[in-house]
Each structure stands twice: as structure tokens, then as C-alpha cells.
View 1: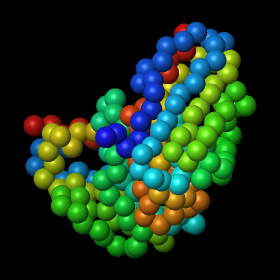
View 2: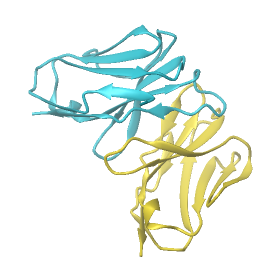
View 3: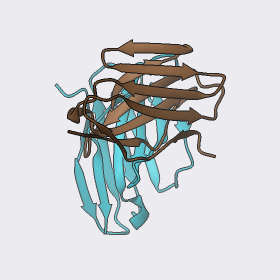
View 4: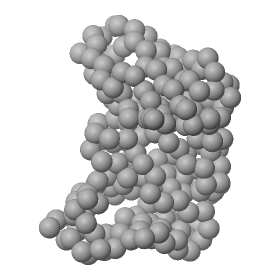
Length: 108
Length: 115
């Protein structure tokens, strides 16, 4: 079993809709959870982190964490074509572990 | 000013050669990392250094040897390159060993192609 699992996609969402990205993790010792966005040919950049159960909102982005279910998600409201990218979920305990990413495509 | 910089950005080389990738960060961070991202976009940690000391050494062939002359630099030397080494290698840094909400800042990546 992979330590951090994501659906590889592609996930296609119409412009203006809500994109929902999901991630599960296996290490119960994980303390912090990150969502990185990676455009094709570019390096990952952090867009959200969360370490408490519940929701955390930042602009159009909401991260949700459920430690009991070992589940973290990212919601993107009012999706824009510029949101088209690969989204990497990551967890950290003694090191940061990445999932394989979900490719998101926003169609106009 | 680039926070985490890697050189070269592209590297094409023949099997069996030895090559190095350099990484420097000007953020004053204590911790630096090397990650390998394969064609399926899976980003896998290889090494982690904290204040020039090796902290994490994942299951990586001995042909890969990191070197940290100071905490602002972490270079990666690869001996006897193989086809399977082709990937994008990312250097990253963070203020301290990853815990809590410390994020990793990534360099622009080095695309290594072994032919």
C-alpha cells in the first residue's frame, strides 16, 4: 500500500464549478498535510497546509482533514482555467511524503 | 533572487557516465532535500540533510551520493548512470526538519535524460 494515495485523474471540471481532490494516507503519525500545485514542467508550489481536523479556507481553496479516516481533501471553488495543473497531496511526520498527484483540467 | 536554485536545468548523458547536480538555497534554511520525480509524476524523497548532516537516506542505490559542504548547498553526484535514472530531480529546502507546518521550497528541477 502506498503511503499517500491519490486518484491520478485526469479530473475534468467545467469552469466556475467546484473541483474536489481527495487523498488518503497510511501513517497515523502524520502531523501536517500539504497540497502542492505543479504546472507542467515546473516545480511544485505550496497552496495549502492543514494540521487540525476540520476545514481551512484560503480564498477559493478549502482544505479538509479527517484524521480518524486518514483523509484529506482540497476543494477549489469557482474553478478557473489557470487551476489546470497536477495537485500533489503530501503528509509529514519525520519526513514529507508525496502522493502521485491528481491531474486537474478545467474546461472553458 | 531565486530562493532555491539548481544547475543544470537539463542534463543529457550516456549510460555509464558520472554526473553531478548542484543546489543552493539563499533562504537561510537548515534542511535540504533531494527528490526524484518519475514520468508518472511520483515525487519520491531520496535524501534529507539538516545542518550538513545526513538525516534521511531512503532506499537509493549507492551510485547516488549527496554532499553538503555547508547548510546552503546540497549537491548530488551520480555514478555509472543507468537508463532508469532518467527523471526530474528536485532540490528543496525547509526552515527545519519537516514538522508542523513548515513547508518545503523547491528548486526548478533538473531533467536528467540517460541515453
